[in-house]
Image (cartoon, rainbow, N blue to C red; front, side, top):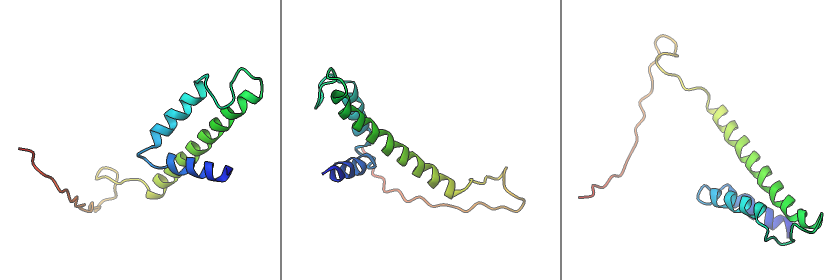
Length: 102
């Protein structure tokens, strides 16, 4: 069961549509006095908060490292001022399906 919960959390936090909702909900759960196990019970009350905090930090750090690695793999962007002589930038075409709103 633990794997299914962590897999669900991982998949949802990596979905850009729900990422900020999950981060906000996790932070709200951590500061909320209403938990699965109340915080006023020593040690037992802190376990659920520790699990949520661990999941949140682990997934956010993994996501951030993947993004940084992706940016590093793309390499630096060359502009006319930083490129070697004779560098001609490639033209990029952006296809936009626009509809006028009259």
